[in-house]
Length: 214
Ligand SMILES: Nc1nc2c(ncn2[C@@H]2O[C@H](COP(=O)(O)OP(=O)(O)OP(=O)(O)O)[C@@H](O)[C@H]2O)c(=O)[nH]1
Ligand SMILES: [Mg+2]
Image (spheres, rainbow, N blue to C red):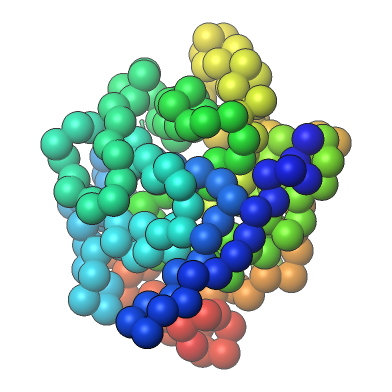
């Protein structure tokens, strides 16, 4: 199923180098940032918003979908789409992404994983196997990561069925134990830096020697 979707290449020019991904991207940005206390998508790190960092990691994807309230964010090169089920959480964000994306693979990210570089997404894409429906990284603590993961649009009926029964946990879209969920181990700890609280923002990039920014 997935082999024909593995399109990789690189565009190199005098002013830029951009990796070209063979998949769509969706950033879900419809959360309330309750723990952070203000909109964490717009929090600044190294002179850029967290949202811009996440978007930069996926600049080579096409199409690029921002699943957020229309008008809330301006992200050049990204198409903003409102949630089909507003306020229902990340699983509903995934449903919206899989509904609008062309048939194939979608890289799903939150706004709060600013260290997900093209190399991270490349590592996930390299792990694709025929019949897979999701590819998820395993963090150093052993937990599979349902955000910062690849999902195939063929998962949409499963996601919709879960939501219709009242389920809201994103990790149930493609649980690690399912044969069609591929797990990727051994990626650097720095990729998994996650901002939920102000202290997490202050700690970003401090994992010396462990991440892409160290
Ligand atoms: N599109 C969409 N994205 C969501 C929704 N709920 C959460 N997200 C996004 O999912 C990602 C991870 O969610 P959380 O870390 O819980 O973010 P949050 O819900 O804004 O933060 P808390 O209120 O502190 O839980 C973030 O990028 C959120 O913006 C939703 O209902 N719709
Ligand atoms: Mg939340």
